[in-house]
Image (cartoon, rainbow, N blue to C red; front, side, top):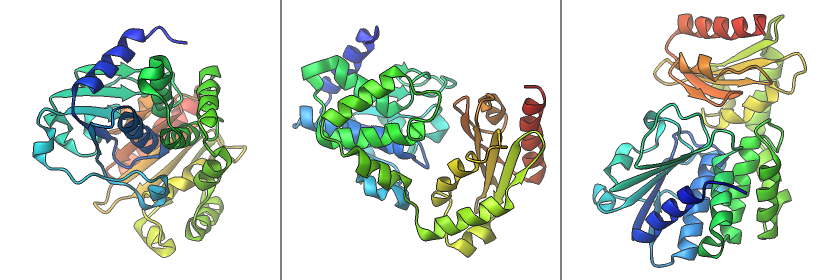
Length: 319
């Protein structure tokens, strides 16, 4: 199903040649980042039981149910190690900056290639998720890199998470094909779907507030501010607030939406989404980037916040 035979073999041969492999992914991980990281770990461990595979990076409490663990490693572990960075477009967003101490670095990602890094780069920005790419790697390598149920569960969670339950336009025939392979491997798709769809009561209560206070202009630009005071009131942290993001998109009148999440240092983390209009080039102007319809950014103050909203509104005025 692919013409990338050389890159699959190149990655596989590097995995074969190293005894120690360290897997990184981006900060503030989502199900795809954790699914790809944990899924690849389990694939390597199952097919090469003599290798030592570490996963690093902080794991948000709301995604601990996936079962990906953080390895406690020191600088010395990176000596003569292969590092694989997953689902991370640019180096600044890699969780644990020791990644560059590895002897060899592989980048596997499905975001636009704005920051080339690593000795080997496998980037396909038309893919639904990095987890889908890992399933594809296993498929193309056949018996050399067999899928397991444990890996399949994490990779399926990654695909479901990054496709919004197969709703986004990045989904294609390959996505369904590889998801079907994971189901054949024994994945309980209904259970994973429920786990990803559930939210704590406190987040549901915050969602009620958001629906009542979202600002929507005549062009379909929507935004809401999650201040530190508001997050404390509902006892929701910055990572948990990510569950709110898709909800605003369910409003018929909304075309582009932004959730501004206050940070401890006074800046705002911006989660930007769009139904049809490309937005990632705007996010790149505000210390961010991402996919055409799903991006993140960071603004330092209220004036930058207003400038970001003005830029997004301009897109809608000219669509």
